[in-house]
Length: 184
Length: 416
Image (cartoon, rainbow over all chains, first blue to last red; front, side, top):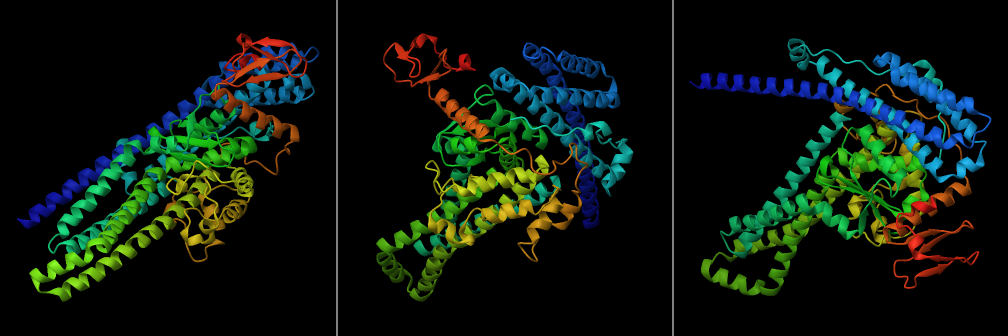
């Protein structure tokens, strides 16, 4: 009789553990997907901000229109990019174009003093940070999720439930080379 | 980091459990001393006190603290940079955006409050806003956000209230004994005849009433200091730039001003201890915060990396033979691949102009929140009219042009 109760207790505990671990895996996987979506949200914000900046800066920069055309072109390429790999390269190109613009803007004191411009610059700086932090958080969640799928005993459930490992976001080489511009 | 939070959680629940049992034992002893067999009644009183206080703190604690500090909520349009920085670190930490508050006080401090990440707020003083650059602000906000993410406010508020309840109960008992002790004792010994046992119990009661609050407080303080270190470590990991927080702490520690809005009850919540009187700083054992100089040195000792284990390595140079977090928790959290290249070397130094502009921006924000009118003059002066100004016109002090108050905008947008 007692043995029967113990056996029942063990079975109930096993089921509880199974449910908890499975749900934990699902939660971690959803977290990874959510984190990926957050990157897109921030990238879209960046694309939306750029036309405003170009519009304000245009009037000040008589002779250096091609810097602005570069930014606009890079933005269009980034918006048209398909898939994470292509998007990563296009976004890196956009970052490069923006860095070029910021460098040129340094030569126009009037521009730096303009409140609208400095507000837009703050928004763009912040959006760049948000993109970086969203990627960082994505990688953090991928690490948590992957660890869950690898460690014993959760890996048994992960194999049974078909939980694939997620991929880390890797910054393309040219983006790593972009120097960090300081805009305050 | 996620494992660390779990280890942290277990420790905090142990603290709450220990404090509750101290409270229950104290309640029992006091009950027995008051009336033999009244131990259960004593426990009941202790539990009721603790429950009521905890519930109050759980649901209304954050609002009470914010109201006590005179904090005002702000939107993105009021202070875009502060709002953006908070949003950035909340993205890095993967928690919902907390509400942002500012405190009109020139002392330099900041705190976070709220029972969980969904009901969280961060607050920062005017003094800190005026002095910190973007990176430093990010470091401070990351520290506050780590408190939110680790649910430190909840545990520390609950623990603080239990400590308070223990002290309250002990105080009630000692006072009661002082005023009516003699009468109670005589009546009891008449009835029972066993005066010896009763006297021993009274001595135990007095000892418990004196020791329990001290023990509870020391436990609580040790836990609080550890949480500050962990929040520093998490902040370094979130921003991948420990120097930001280190240099902010340096600026804050150089400031000797006392935050008027803070008192002993809310002191544990701030980024550095706000009550800078001598006896508060005299003993490291009796403080809610570790010494700032040590926190800075640990952050700087991390070098160019920003993982939890790097922080622990730097921390151990100050705490030989101790560990900040269980080894398993650190092993489970190796530094993740950085999403952005770690910042190298010092950034461009700030100019005096930058500092002035930042200070003006912060001051204007508080004027705007206080109901000032902003009128731009053609000569470049921005007139700032206080809310109590009675006349319909105001004269520009530089060029003498008269402006009507109707020109002004409360948002101050026209001047920007």
